[in-house]
Image (cartoon, rainbow, N blue to C red):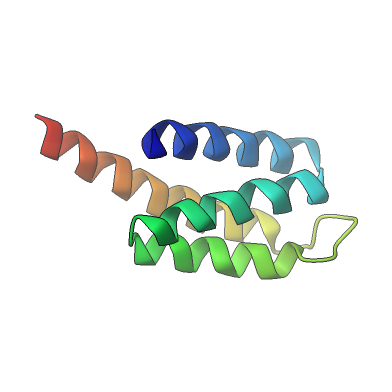
Length: 88
């Protein structure tokens, strides 16, 4: 269940960043951060925290949001790769 939520919120985050919706991106990355913390995915949680704080209270996308999103995406990819290896 957590994995499905994580996948959904990662997709929501990417869509929000691509569309320029700072408020939706904040909600998605904040939720993803909570899931990462619940699962003790520390590096993913740290990347999400940095992005969450950059977006907090922003009505427009900050200039550094794309780089922060890329960091979240890298950590997310590492998590999913590791999970795939464990399931094999």
